[in-house]
Image 1 (tube, rainbow, N blue to C red):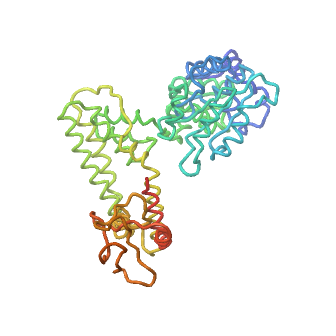
Image 2 (cartoon, helix red, strand yellow):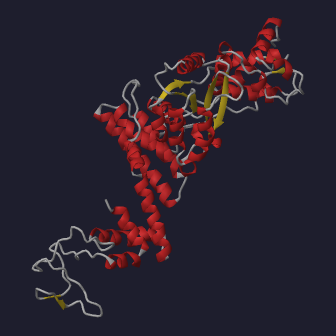
Image 3 (cartoon, one colour):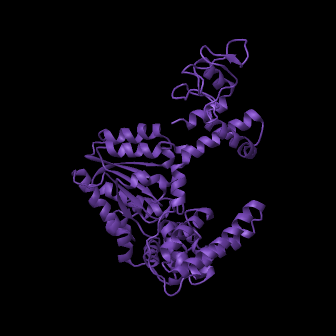
Length: 484
């Protein structure tokens, strides 16, 4: 067992500005992540270079010399992103305005809270502010509509440095933010660095420990220092010493990995099991991962034989996945994953070669048509309500005919630019009130159901068009959506 020394304890206690006060509290009630929070960048267990890059950018931004208007800290949880911002603010005597995704879910809230803080002077007499928007990954779809655009507006109008933090910056919804950001990457903290920090905590708490116990806690944290300290506090609670058998209850944490790390893990795997395990902790569902594999097979394998074999296995995996969804035989999904990921890996001939993986073009194309698909979905729901049919039936039996009729000008027809019927001498055909459709025009023979050369009815105008539009709100809406 190792024990604390006076020098080590003194160094660790100096790291925390609140350690002396926290030590007087009831044991176990104060989170050790707060009690032993570093007070200087030099005391950080990892990512010191990234933290120093942030400090340099904030100084340049305050001096008006920064090339980018904001800094974006990205990396896995527990790697020091939030801690770095706190230390930098304290070092520069700046007021820290911190918000997370739950605080700015809409455009109005962003402008009201962050927008005001970014343009007003400090209420505490500080010479500067740092606006910190954390956990941007929490922004999602309809709930946070307008949030990203409002954040970009705050950045452009802010008098002070704005710092963003997220786990995965490559999400398509953050594309507009990436272009104006100084990208600062925070990597997973190495296991030896985590172990060294845990030893300092143990010495400061007067806890006896074995090297094996410390290493087990550090390894199972998966590069997340915050999680390691929380786990360490849990297993050490109520103990005077800690051995390997005392930490056996801890499970290895499955950490979320970046999508590019996932692709590297798949294509560099030597076995099917390795390729399958590489997908664990991915920041996307299995459907999205298959799209990534499909897109990057051609990137990873320039040779035709390797590429053909990888696509062959991917198609077999996709067959199993589609049957699992269609027949709700979810047990088939395991086979589909192994065939797709394992086949992509085993198609490699020779050693793994680095490749620059790219975002799936199909997903990019779908994001461009998101509004159009949303409008179509809204229309189908409207058809279903009015016609009392399911969405599936509306797609198969109603929508094709509605599209044909709409393209033929059957709904909400316009009078402008309509060809005149042949032989009518420029006169329009009108149906008099109470009369038949077979009526003689002023300067031509009798016409029955006049049509243009293309076989379409001439478009009506005025009250007639309004009447046609009022007959069906759904069809009028569809006609409007297709209008240029």
